[in-house]
Length: 403
Image (spheres, rainbow, N blue to C red):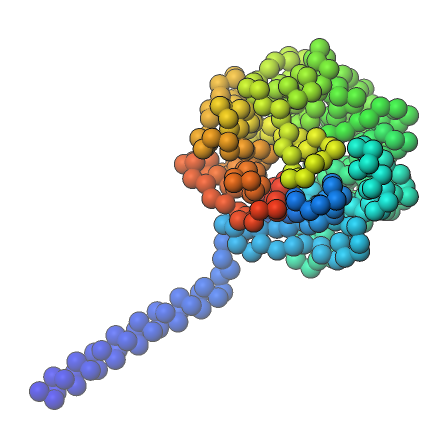
């Protein structure tokens, strides 16, 4: 009996040691092999219900990042917003996903009070300072590129030039008008691409091959060569044209056209010909108020976005009392991809670089949150779970690291 029991105990011990060995081996492999990289999503959080008007709430804006599953939410570049009346906004990524593009704003309380009283912006060098920074997402170091050989006190829209990361694009306020600029990676050799223009040019973007640019000037869309030459207006016959975006293959340009607060997605060929209306927004005004207090400005424009492969466009349209997300093929066939309770608002659709996910804003129970939808099966989950009086806005997907 003892012999049988001893053999059984020995066998159990060997089995236990074998299992322990497997566990130790598995643990060691897990430690040696890093987990699969998950993309970060950059965005901006702010308060929405503070008394005092627009500036009181805008000054609470902070650039944030969060993981695809909603974990790891944290502020980034906190050192840029420590002074009174300053804030940060997340604006994009470098092509390798290592650097975050952050806007840092400051407005004097005196100027903010004047704007609130007169219900209009007053951009002066004494009352405003807005610059664009590159921030190392891991180390936290910051570089203010628009302060190098400064051309303006108000600079926005920084982006890495497609196909040539040694150049950057941005927009600067010159003589009361916005101008598209190009500069070197170190912030030097800033070049005005609409030199001597006395019109307000905004929505500046470059094509994927870096050879063409587009912008809207006095609410008319223009295309030009990368140095600003050979500018040509895309003739739509509409008074309000806004937010041009190049397709992945550079063959088409997407933008909004129509009347102010009654405009719709249009597509044209890269040279401005072949204009056609792609979708109708069904009475949706096309902007999302990002404050819960009275705001003298109209809110944040809700523009459509190309799918990652350039074969379709993500847009928003009114369906009954809700604003839903749609995927519209280039032949104009719409597919409604959200079906929500009455009164739900969706806005700012933003596809991931690999085309697998769609990030977007959603207004639920009076709070502006960020959600993600998996394209393949329409499964969705929340990235943020903020309390009333707070908002999460303007998502930006981190590009995958170069292999």
